[in-house]
Length: 363
Image (cartoon, rainbow, N blue to C red; front, side, top):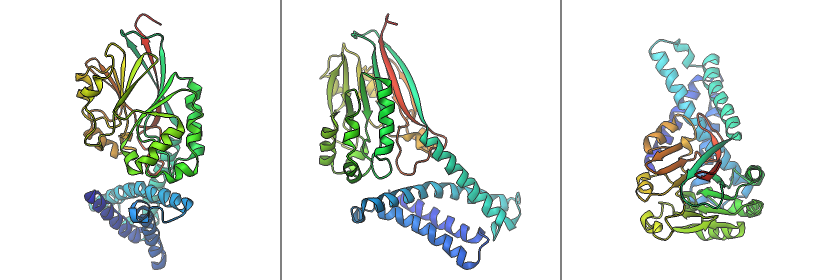
């Protein structure tokens, strides 16, 4: 974490210095740009440093969250834009004058980044519907329709109005059951409780089962559990339930280093039934294959949220997004319907999954 903070600080200093050099403003105007960037960074610090959490009003906290996390995305792209410009000047691909007090240089750098973020914001608002068709030789009373979500991230930036639209999407599918693979909560229960978001969950016209994600541990876990109860969410924390003839196992998040093994959880269910595992973080998928799990649903990766961070998640996980078949086990890793931080999807998607499990021989 300290290394990441140092990288952010280095990028901020570099971008601020380059912005000071390139904008064609008087000295006072240049310093104003630098100060605005510093305030955006300060918003990020104030929102995430524990000593300041709860020190401000809900509205001000939400503003800090939006400004600070959006600045992280802008900082990433401004860093790359300035680096590319510096390299281009060094290689004499563009005139050196583009680097100093340049209207064209500043317009190119800030214009491209602004366009990317605008497109990323539009892309985030669009929710992809992913359809999966799974067949099984195991007994099943009838075809079962599931709506599956991950990474809802309710809180300072995703509130009642937006979540209400997602509930409408879920209900339109008329599912038999809804499964959520963790990170329902973002970082704080304060905005969740203030907006009475449990009432929106109560509008879902199907039973909801969920496991923990790592973000549930960022807040008060007792408050999280109380919210789940108020919302009518069936929490599966190293436990299992049988719903419509299907086993659903929910694993505690790997944040808990003492969580139960998948092997021990599989001993608690009837293996002759179709078995679904909810596990927020898609590590060690070979365990599901070894235990002959029929289907595992995970999230967590967000597929990096924005390029080139998607290259990082692709290197970290066996699969950071999409469908994977391992022996007799099917796995789907969702990029999430919600998002952490700034609402931008650049090179990635926000999605929900609609899966139908059909007994073999039934059309």
